[in-house]
Image (cartoon, rainbow, N blue to C red; front, side):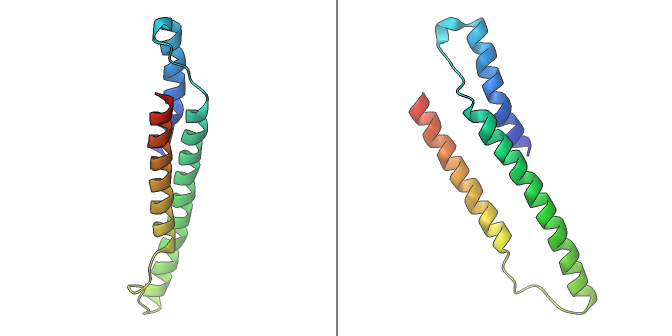
Length: 97
């Protein structure tokens, strides 16, 4: 969520930079606001899902069951999604430069 906030505020930084240094020609397309907001919302979703998963695993342990053999589909999904977001941002930065 913190990284999403930084990404979202990067567009504001570019706008301020363009006002103070018009010779640099830096422009913000608004893309950073949407990507940053999406990362913040992803962080919120991960927090909610992990809280639910925590309570489910505690309930399993209280029943004497083990959850050690279960794979976390959510963790794999989030890691893949974040890797794709990072790749998309890298491509965007190379294309916009």
